[in-house]
Each structure stands twice: as structure tokens, then as C-alpha cells.
Image 1: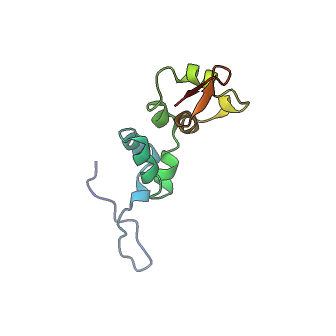
Image 2: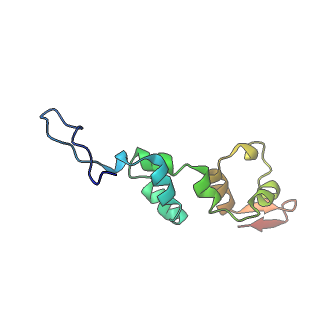
Image 3: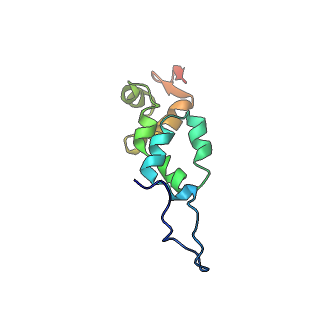
Length: 108
């Protein structure tokens, strides 16, 4: 595999352009994001579009959720659209205080 970026990408003056962060494949960025904590994922997502799009991948956020998150979602997020939420949105909703057991308890 090539160790450098091909010189076929040039600007108007026929000067080779250097690769940028946005040139990384989204799948590679997503795999790197799996190793970060959620606040860091959100910070990195602000870098550029490729990082933001990669940060939306469900497999990243599913790895941050507890193993029994489906049960928790069933108990805590009873609103109509909860089953349509992405994993990132589920993570965000579970980080907020939620009323459970008929409003008698709060889960964090």
C-alpha cells in the first residue's frame, strides 16, 4: 500500500494538494471514535463534516450504552418516538433524569 497520497490531486496551479482530515474515510473515523469517551466524541464531531457524520454511527454509541439499555429504554422512555431513536439519541436521553415506576423514582 502506498505510504503517501497520490500526486494526481492538484490545485489550479498543478501543485499537489495535501490530504486533510476530511479526506479520511468515514468508517475509519468512526472506528477511532469508538475509543473515545462520549464528551470527547462530541468535541471531535465539531472538527468537520466527516467527523460529525462518523459520530452519528449507531455502533459507536451502542458500545457506550449499558448492556440492558433496551430494558431501561422500555421503562424510562415511554414516549411514542423512543423506538425510532438512534443510539446517540438514546444515550443522550438516558443521561438526563428520567421518571420511572409511575413517576415515583428518578433514574440518572
